[in-house]
Amino acid sequence: MSELYAVRRGRLRDRCAAAGSGAALVSRPANVRYLAGGAPPGAVLLLGPSAGETDVLICPGMSVVDPADGRPDEQLRIMVLPAQGGGDAVVAAARTAAAAGADSLAVEEHHLTVARHRAVASVAPRLRLGDLAGAVEQLRIVKDEEEIASLRIAAEITDQALGEMLESILVGRTERHLALELERRLVDHGADGSAFPTSVATGPNAGLGRHRPSDRRVEEGDFLSVCLGANYHGYRCEIGRTFVIGTTPADWQVELYDVVFAAQRAGREALVPGAEYREVDRAARHVLAAAGYGEALPPQTGHGVGLEIEEDPQLAPAAMGKLDACVPVTVEPGVHLPGRGGVRIDDTLVVRPEADGGPELLTITTKELLAL
Image 1 (tube, rainbow, N blue to C red):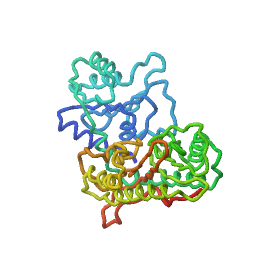
Image 2 (image 1 turned 90 degrees about the horizontal axis):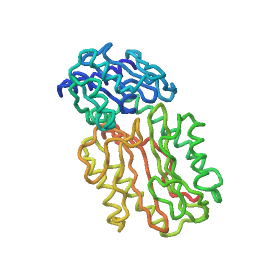
Image 3 (image 1 turned 120 degrees about the vertical axis):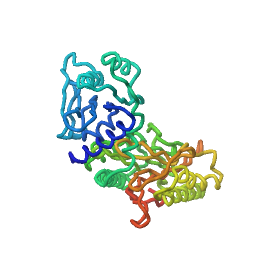
Image 4 (image 1 turned 45 degrees about the vertical axis):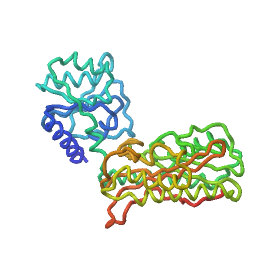
């Protein structure tokens, strides 16, 4: 594993060198974990112009080490700031870079606050500050097979938790209660926690993206839409399903479900290496628009997943770029009809070439419209 993280840091170092920056300061937590293997909250990573002792993981002295945050690469030098008065790890990294003789430092301006950026400039006025922009995020888009293996386990845990809930009695229980139960089941099956706040939506709430569970109780005839995901070793997946409660689905429910299912299938089938992000979105969106639901569509059809539940690429109408193999994404079209409810169907998949069987479906809970 140490070699893997060293390779990742080497790729970032090459990018920095090409941009004329001698050192880099990575502060965004997911990016620190990607390059360092793990770190307590508040840690930052300082990369020097060459590999070795110039790569330093700087940790606040009050940080609590949690196994869920991963284990730092043994090749890194660890600097722990004093628990009292140790200051900001970002500022300490700037001082360290200046003391090592660096003349430039690329920072993640999209993550640093204005105050921290000013503090860096203040303690190391001779350092020429540049912007890493989204360099690490771009490196994270294509996953290696070990990352995909973690996502696969996260998906298995998520399927298990959802499957168990479907076997329980649902009528009369609140959205909030069901969401809490799902999150408990994720941990029971080995997750470090939930990948994001679990959404359970019933009746007129069904089909809303990222609905915050309420005290509304499940009633017969309701649509019930659920969206959840496990966090396993830092990697996060997502699944969304919609069901009908306690009775044969009404004709309008069957019709709406069939349209959303067709849109989701079109999006999944469009996941091939070289496909434009916006073409995947268009494949799913066209089905819904043709059925008359063009005004009820979310701003995107899907997104990348990994160390964060929503990362690049974005599958949206204006998104620029093309898919590569080994990119995990969600495909999650949905329609919500105000006052009636709606349908969301969401899977996590990995883009694979046709020669390897096409898109790899990680979340396998049935997409049949079940009456629970």
